[in-house]
Length: 163
Image (cartoon, rainbow, N blue to C red; front, side, top):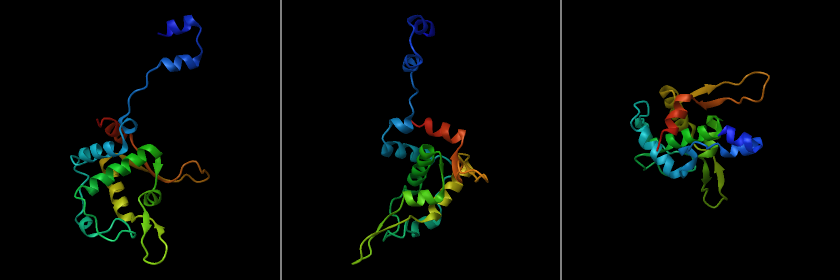
């Protein structure tokens, strides 16, 4: 193929157009469909066990009732893994903001509230134990690396193998 492209005298841009990109299910499937498939795959991993206390807690101070979905733990874990995959390095505080919502304060106007951090921290610890993520600490003197979690090669391979 290179010989054919070179003999035509094509530019580098034309060469890159002829290279086929690999399909990546993380981006190809709709987010909802992919998260459900990833949640089903996470159920088979022994590190991702739902703690007993999850049945009694709210997911955020803006919620009025505890979590009622039976598969909530695995769905939230799948969503968090996908966020880390997309955004490269993500910390607990950013995820709290991501999963937050508006609190109904009665007669007062609604106000945004961050999600609770315990559920997110526990899921990230389970991801670390399974080897899907690793902790990135801040390097003094540089602002390029922000602290948080980063997906490992094992986690990347696991997420890309979901069909």
